[in-house]
Image 1 (cartoon, rainbow, N blue to C red):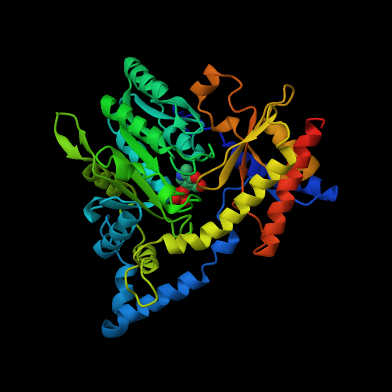
Image 2: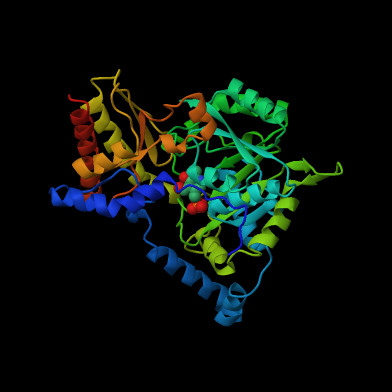
Length: 454
Ligand SMILES: Cc1ncc(COP(=O)(O)O)c(C=O)c1O
């Protein structure tokens, strides 16, 4: 084959771990160790049984077909449809999601996407159109899927910003935008996961959100809010910080996905924005319009049957629009809250005596807590996490790989004292799930104490 200018993208550490797992698990098993899952970021099997969803969807199709017959209902669901999908689905979603998060959503600004991954893809693809050098501002650490997609463009560069437990350092955020522009880059947007940050294991405080908005408004930079865990929230309803789409709709691009509140398989997502962009020639254009041409040239249309299935998810047993998805979410939150409590209380009980050595985040939402290990002779690198699997049967993900390259230049040790612990996944359900999470948390704490010589 002829030579190209293509470059090989690195394999993510999560995929590397997934690939290494069978062999490591074998080693652990040969030592009589059980495998403890604190690595995978998958929704729990207890809340992803599709049976009830499918029965409800079928009942909805039968309900729709009462007057017209099933064929008239199903045929369009397997045919070509508009890039924006059915208006009724978007109207229902805009009303319910808008009410749940105190945002006034207009259905005409909603575009279906292939999960939130598809939303990231559309945005990156749009900003690559100019052929210019493109800068993305993001957190250190940040979501690996975003880094993977943004880095596909050879003229892209990531400018990252360190975080504390409330969110990004806003002075650094402003400075990185200035630096990117001084380096000759078009700044596309600031990408973040403000609720249940993956892999940061925090939610941004309400005050930090306001500071971020101020910085971005001053610099005229869009904020992309990736919101997979918006409904997986552990705070009391009145304590949940509002999302950016509610706080600053004209500045925000919001990525919704049904992967965690619903099921990941149907790949349902929506991108929503009311922002405008000034394009070449000086015209101000709604970003939705630009994303629409991007979407129609990319996937052309979302699967209409999957979207109609999602529509049924927005309706109650009488096929009336739900007032809120929070009661649906609560069935899932219950499981994750229990898991989270088991992990955090075990960490407190078994490792809470040495705060100078050990620390961890208390996530307000999402699937992850970040564990900090400040032992002078331990590096939380790939070899260390592989050792935790082979010696103790404990699967975790090292955090260093989620730090963009510039963050590792600023601090070569970035993330090398941290592990991402996920409390979302185990194999059993109910009492078995609780027992597995307990055993995993205990095994992790034991492993860490042993490794530290305590
Ligand atoms: C921050 C973040 N964004 C996006 C995704 C992918 O979501 P989707 O299934 O909607 O593509 C995940 C999945 O874990 C995630 O944590």
